[in-house]
Amino acid sequence: MPTSLYDLIIPTFIKGLQTFDHVLTKAEQYAKEKGLNADEVFPQARLVDDQLPLVFQVQTATKAVQTTIGRLTGVEPTFFEDNEKTIADLHARIQKALEAVKSVKPEDVNSREDVKVELPRPDRILHLTVKEATLYHGQTNFFFHIVTGYSILRAQGVPIGKADYLGSFLAQ
Image (cartoon, rainbow, N blue to C red):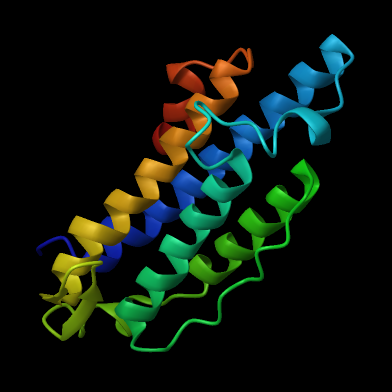
């Protein structure tokens, strides 16, 4: 039996969100050990001045999940408000996204792989199948923001490494 789109993307989103949650927990532990206020140091941290901060990375990774679930199921997503200020807020947002992903059923997804959707870009609108939009945009965008968030925390001195990133993906 071939691997379904559900099998490719839903577990990946779950594991990616768990990874983001894990590195945020590591940031909290690091701040506590160093006598820092994690809520003052991390949410607005960024790699460079013209890049958006950690809070944006979490918001956008979870929006990528919500948007992709909408395409996969054909149900217009209700987006979370972008009002997170603290690490606890970021954890809560990730948990809400996890709940949304876990609510998706294979039968909601697998019949929609070839449905055409529009992907608005700044200079044009792309016409893709749900499968293409999921694999080449939704998943890629999701990973970009997780890795950027990871990199922001690493640049702030949080002792995270490859095992912290891959751990959730490899856990059974």
